[in-house]
Length: 197
Image (cartoon, rainbow, N blue to C red; front, side):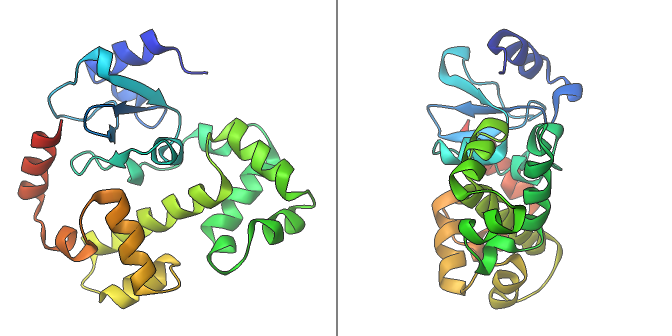
């Protein structure tokens, strides 16, 4: 469990030792950030904390365009304490839920789908499906920022079944189309993020 006072002190001090260990969600903007985010600090009464990016997204928050919390390497909280969860995360990262179901993944792990969902909720704070979606978006965002690939190729390489599905998930999360984010330069991202908090 996250201690609100410890997390709040860390985010107010922008303590880098907490980066990736929790995420700050701002209720008024519906955006979540890393504790080291350089934007203007929101009021304490307007925040809550989540252990993982999928947990924040499942609660209805979208990632900050400035600190890019969805790109933080998976922290220990993602791996949890169970070998089963760690194995499931590796399989999801390799695309197990891109074309397969949670039931298929659970079968590969030798457990039932309900038990797998309980383990994910306990250790990650989100479902296997939400975790897979966050991983796909993270990969797509990385490709958008670092390559000149077409949207179709980015969608395919990120594990989306179609460009349409990719566009829909991306727009739901970021509030804009992938092509709009691709066109944004780093300075413009910083300006937009600064206005959102």
